[in-house]
Image (cartoon, rainbow, N blue to C red; front, top):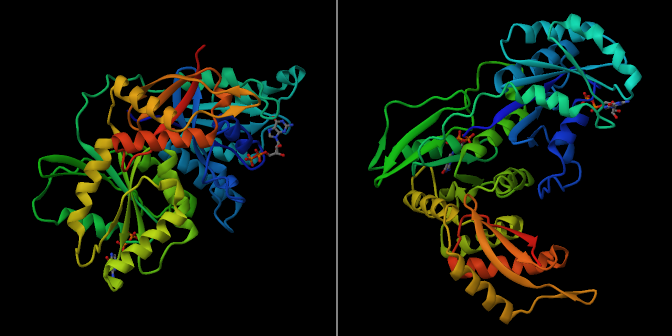
Length: 436
Ligand code: GDP
Ligand code: GDP
C-alpha cells in the first residue's frame, strides 16, 4: 500500500520546518546524527490517529540564487506533483502578503486538496484574527502554533480526511520490488540495462508506469521482479528536479516501495561520505539491502582486492553489517550473474518468520551463554520472545523492565538470532516490552 503524502507549502519563515519537525517527531537516525545533516531532512514519516503518512517540507528545497517568487512557484510545484494533500501555511501575525496570494493562485489551479494552516497563533485571543484568511479561497483557516504545538489535532483531522479511501489490500504476491540507489554516475542506469539485457530475463512489454516512478517488471528463473526507477519521471525541465534534495526525495520514495534496495558504490572512485548517507536511508527504512560495488572492471581483480575493498566497506558501513556485498561490472557484465541470487536471498530473509518455540530455545541458550546484565542492583529478566512482524523481521522480547535492556545486550541477542536463523541481507528489529 502506498502511503499518502502531505506537503507543506508557504513562504519563508511562516514555520514550515517547525511543523515538519513536530510531525516527524523524534526519529532515531544514524544518518542524521552527523552534525550539519539534520536540517537536510525534508521528507519523513509521520503519524496521526491510525494514519501513517509521509510529509515533505518543500521549504527545504532551495534553489540557489533564484528570486523568491520562482522558489515559491517551484516549491508549490513539488507539492502539487508529489502530494495527495497540501498544507498551505501562512503567518497569522502578518496577515496576507503578496507572496501568499501568489502561492494561492498556483495551488488553486492544482485540483489537489489544500488545507490552510495559519501559524503563530500562540494564544486564544489571536484566533479571532484568522478569519481574514478565508479570502485566500481555501475554506476554513486552521489556527495553529508550531512553537506551542496548538491546533495541530484539528489541522491533521482535516488533512487525513482527504486521504484516499484505503483500498482492499492487493493479494499478497511474491514479486520482488527493488530499486538502485547511489550518487550520480555510480552506474545505476547502466546496471539496470545490464540486468534487463541478461540472458533468460523476460522483460514485460507493458512497462507499468505509476505516478511516482517508472517500474519495469521482468521475470528471471521463474521469479517476478519489478525494478523501481529512482530517477522517475524526471527531466521535465523543472528547476527543482536538478536539485540534490529533490533527488534524495525521489530516492526515498523509491526505497519506500522496495523490498530490496541495491546500494551502489563506485569501485573506481571509492567510498565517499555521500555514499554512506544514501545507504543509511535504506537501512532506516527497514529494507533488505545488497551492497553493489560497480565498475569492478577498473580494478585489477584478484582476491586480495576484493578482501581489501570489503574491509573498507565494513568499516564505513557498520550499520549495514548484515548486507551482502557483490562486486561486478555493469559495463563488461562480469560477475553480474551473482547479483540476482543475492537479491532473492535478501528478500526471502526480509520476509522470513521463525517459530516461537525455536526462537525461545535460541534466546534461552543465549541467556545461558551470556547472563543478562545488572543495572543498579537490578537484573534484567527475559521471559520470552516472539516475532511480531516481517519486512523487516521484528521481535518483541518480554522483560521485567525494558530500561534494563541495554543496547549492547540487545545487540548480543540480535547476533544470536542472526547466527541461528541466518538473516543475511535484512535488518532485524528487537523491542523490549514490560511483562511482570
Ligand atoms: P520556515 O522557513 O517556513 O520553515 O519557518 P521556520 O519553521 O524556520 O520558522 C521561522 C521562525 O518562526 C522561527 O524563528 C520559528 O521559531 C518561528 N516560529 C515557528 N512557529 C511558530 C509559532 O507557532 N509561533 C511563533 N511565535 N513563532 C514560530
Ligand atoms: P547513474 O548516474 O548512476 O545512472 O550512472 P550511469 O549508468 O549513467 O553511468 C555513469 C558512467 O559510468 C557512464 O559513463 C557509464 O558508462 C560508466 N559505467 C557504468 N558502469 C560501469 C562499469 O561497470 N565499469 C566502467 N568502467 N564504467 C561504468
